[in-house]
Length: 425
Image (cartoon, rainbow, N blue to C red; front, side):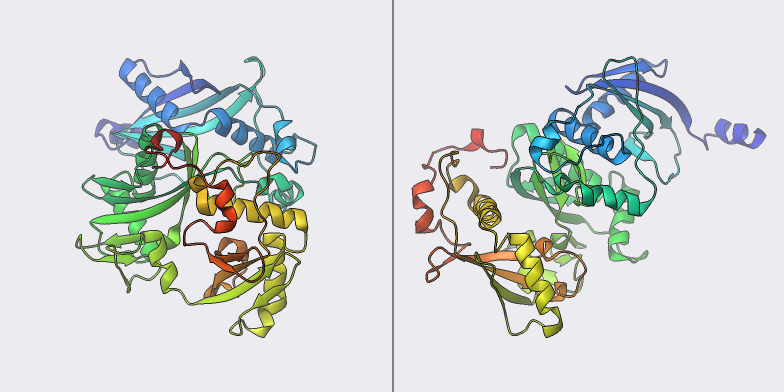
């Protein structure tokens, strides 16, 4: 204790301020207990407002915690099943604000702040503000995975918002393409900064971790691409979501990440020896077109044709995985998958399809699969890219070209300014 007191007097230990806060689903934060300093109290409140979920993300997070804790006995399969689950309107968070020198502590959720860090230590939920429940996920990995497998709703995803690429310079400048909507801008900037490192030390540490080289030179700038989605009904811990901010899920597309040491030549993290031509293809495509790909054609009736360059020992497994991923062989599942695929491909070029309408269903879809993914244990649905469709089995339509004539009846009317209707311009 004497040594600890001496280190604190010398400024070698942080000053710690415990706190307790109550939050509601609307985003309001009330500090129940905290520092005597009003400025420090406001700092805690502001950071909790910016980092904690609300609205649909709040419901998704609560229902996920409830399921993983084993306190909800029903099997959850559909979005309707999820909607039937309860959602507590109140949350209580305990933690501490540590100001001064702070060392890394594994297993803790931390929020960096100027001059220190906020550590979140505990979380409880309440329906009435009187009884508070703590949800503890299983420690046994097999039990954890069993819960995910037994509740298919964990595979549901939120509606796509779009993709964006952020070019972030260590000096602080950040260029985002396309421009996010005003209500998302602050969240995007915060997530990109967190992904690349909020401090000079973290900027270097995270880069060297990606490079797997503790002596790698520090880049002047980094470029990352994110897939943005509305919150899924449940938060699958295996989905690759990095953060949920501003009502959006941020999924980093790590294969597209790049960095520059001199401010001119860009290098891919996936292949540091290869240069990325930033003047032509977007970052998310630069790596894709350098990959060696194999082709596959999936038919609505369940047939799967693979290119000659697919190793024979993988053929049956790949065919089975592609049927499962696309719903081929099951008319309803195939229609659902192709509807989602076409909607995500053409986005705002299509009008909203009404309940009594249906987009034409393709007869077959051609896919491109990275050759080095054929032997990976990860599902192929995470790696393949749709390239062409045919609606009659004869005429193939390139998905990178304009809207196919078969979808012309569903084309959205041209407008002069769609900014108010889209979250990404």
